[in-house]
Length: 196
Image (cartoon, rainbow, N blue to C red; front, top):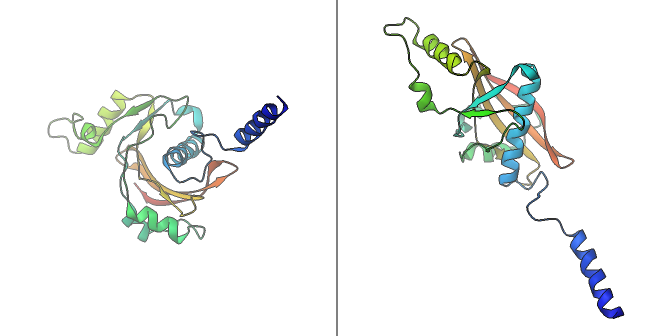
């Protein structure tokens, strides 16, 4: 009986010291990190845009390969060469299903943007599209599109590009550099790549 009890106790200790499957920590570089890094950028955007005034994210569900633009603008001295190389490889995918917990997200594709109505003969077609967009999504701060996520080899650093716009002359793109700290992703640097 004592021998059986000892084996059970050893099994419990081993089980408790083994990482739980399905609950990875930041830095594994897999799908969990792609979702977590994107969510960290959303949170940074919320803080920058004034938080509560954004009631809805309108996001393109596709991630875009934007590696070429990294050659023009580099996000600070912290960017590691292996992170930049992985970003340049550009493996676009789909956005995470729940990128902004607590806020509704409406997926809005490039094709849907192109299908927005414009007034016949309008001098500024882009302005007409933005007007139609805001009629459809009156509680949003605009439309957002994300790049894929590039990771360092050790999975401790990530790079994402995000573009957002709300009018024909109101839009910007940023690189966000993130680091895995204490089991979570944090934005450590950002640099603007384009402004309209």
